[in-house]
Amino acid sequence: MTVPVVTRARSFFRSLVGQIFLLLTVGMMVAALLALIVAEQTRHLDFERWRLQRVVASAVDIAQRLSHDPARIEAMLADQQIMGARMAPGGVALTDPDPDLADALRARFGAHSNPEAGQVPVGLCFPPSKMDPNNRAAGLIGAPRPDCWVVRFSDGTGERRSLALYLPRLVKPPSNLANPVYLLLILLSSAGLAIIVARFVAKPLRRLEHAAEAFSVSIDPEEIPERGPEEVRAALSTFNLMQRRVRAGFAERTQLLAAISHDLQTPLTRLRLRLELVENEELRARLLQDHQAMMTLVREGLDLAASTESQEDWSVIDIDSLLTSMAEDAQDLGAPVRFLAGCGGTVRVKPNALTRCISNLVNNAVKYGGSADIRCARQAGRVLIEVRDQGPGIAPDQLDQMFAPFTRGAAGQPGGRPGTGIGLTIARSLALSFEASVRLANAGEGGLIATIDMKA
Image (cartoon, rainbow, N blue to C red; front, side, top):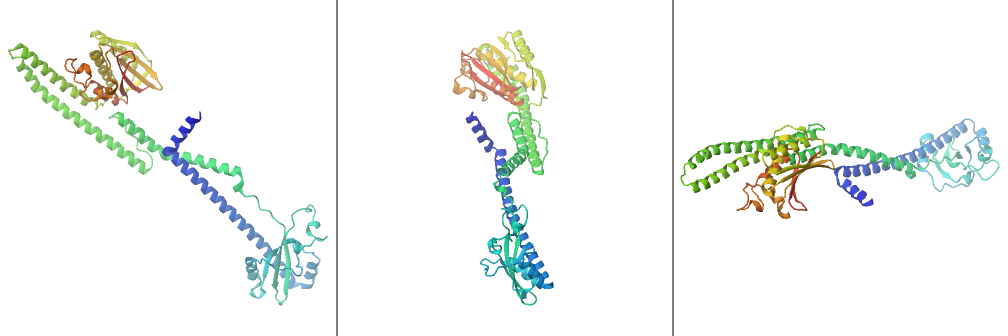
């Protein structure tokens, strides 16, 4: 179970979709984490800025009160009657002054104020006593003690003031970077978006791949609809143009061979008439035999060229009815051909091309194997048509060579049965025209099996 999963995963990440998916997932996760880090840092800075502003606002408020009624405000500060402020205890040193806070105070009080400020331990501002602000409010017993700042400045009269300002201690929320729910959400959203983008990007390439595969097995495939972004439409248009030019080249070749065949048939016909006038019967028979071989080569050469230029329309046919009819027609002509098993249903093919392909295989089986048995079967979404003979078979290392033009097996060598050696070549070319393939294999009990493999 583990091995197929690993193999499929490795195959996926080697594909374009997998690589785009991996790149986008990692990239978006890194970008999201960086955005969270920046957001956390911004929140921290905003929090510190807010605390600084509150300290400045408290200092300005106390300074304004002191300027209007210094005696009363000093007494209230001494008695801790103003929440959030009191006179700073003597002897408190600012070991870590805050320059930003001092600059903000200088901007409000003026340069002559010579302010200095900094946060100090809360115990220096509020020694343990009944006047501890935490003891003066319900529900705050045991709560964190407030943060305390010592602010010193010179007021408008030149008197040096020293205040202790305190604010409730605010605890910042925990960072989202440590929350597994956020991390899982980032991973899932990044992976989901990445797979959608990867499939969208790879879809035109997949269409082009399928079109190239169809073009590799058929010279007359359907053109690709030119849809998508501009670059994709340009690539598909170029591919369609290439298909049209290749088809035009094959058409020109077929027309050329047809013209040559037509021009050759006329002198060959005159030659036969003159050969009939040869008085030596034995010589005349040999010459006529050679003449017939030449005529056969011309006709089958034209058939080979025409097999690669099939302009036939696609149709849906009953495969068993076709095979039964072909076997009965062969039997009527005295050929030992049998239809043994059908596969049922219909297939979408080019009927004439399929018929000619099967006929070539049947003729080869009868010619070189003595008989032909036809079977049909369905397997893994494919239709397999088998034509088996009872001949001697072919050496395994020569099976693929049999599809080369003008190649014959042992029975086709001098002294054997006649033939041009292009029957299998024509059969394979015809099969390619309806997106099928032809292969040969030796039967275990003897004989040769030719199989047509096509879509169900």
